[in-house]
Amino acid sequence: MPKPGIARFVALASEPFRSPCRYNRREMGLLDWLDPTREWPAVSGPAPDVNRMTLQFDSLRFGDPIDSARFLGRPGAFEWHSRIKKDCDLRYAKKGLQLHFREDRLIEIRFVIGTARPLAPDGTPLTREIDKDRIIALFGEPDPGGSDDETLQIFHGNGVASDFDLDESGHLTEWALYPDD
Image 1 (cartoon, rainbow, N blue to C red):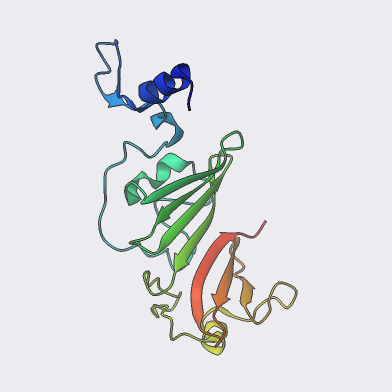
Image 2: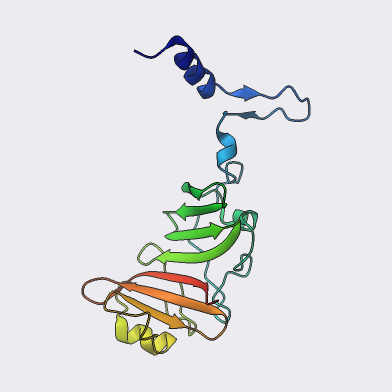
């Protein structure tokens, strides 16, 4: 049986907080501050395409802070890996998109192929029908030290590298982009 003090704390934590400040009338839950995307608007539609030359979003580049992702809207899920290190994921399941931030800076863009249909540099939509040979034709030779039957790692020569995750039949399931430093 919980102690009366704990029950009261749980009840208080679930009640909305009304700021006494006359300039801040927004109601917020006690733990709202844990999600920096909580006030972002909802934005429907598919994941945007990356710029075909830079392999980054035009409005969100590697090294940009989390607030730069606001144009994508509030994510369906937000997860802290380390609040102290500002290491978190923004997951947009309906867009097939996941963003990873570390030290409040974008370090990875990941597309879930099938839900997302990003474009290759030549404009080819990436679908689950794309196989290992087609990925090599579109993006170049994989790095032998970072590739195997499940993942192709390709350095694009523009400061960006990619991991192409493959299913057991060798077809594309996910495409991750990250700085190659």
